[in-house]
Length: 85
Image 1: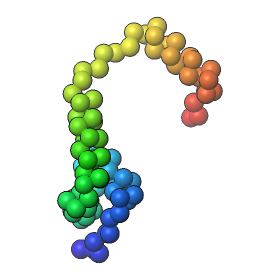
Image 2: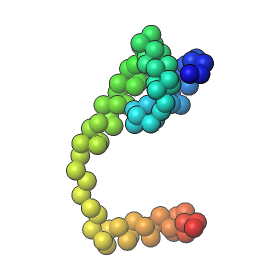
Image 3: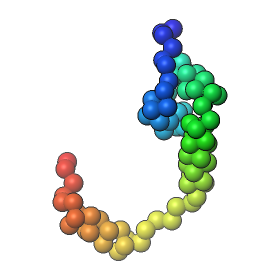
Image 4: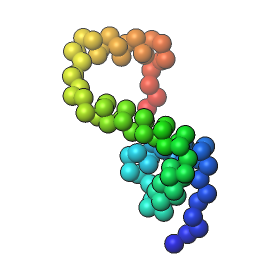
């Protein structure tokens, strides 16, 4: 087991997305949770972000009609150029 990482508010923000997704090592998770337990500002930001993610994940997406998708892709390609392959 390695050295426990010191978590600052900035480092918490850097890792928050992966934390919400559950895509971090257990040791880092424990450090982030310890920071959340003592930092009300990060806890509020985390809680609001997590709730927002949960709301968006609960929506059923409706597929775009083909003509709308084609026009959108065309407009993006005109604006930003062809995607690199």
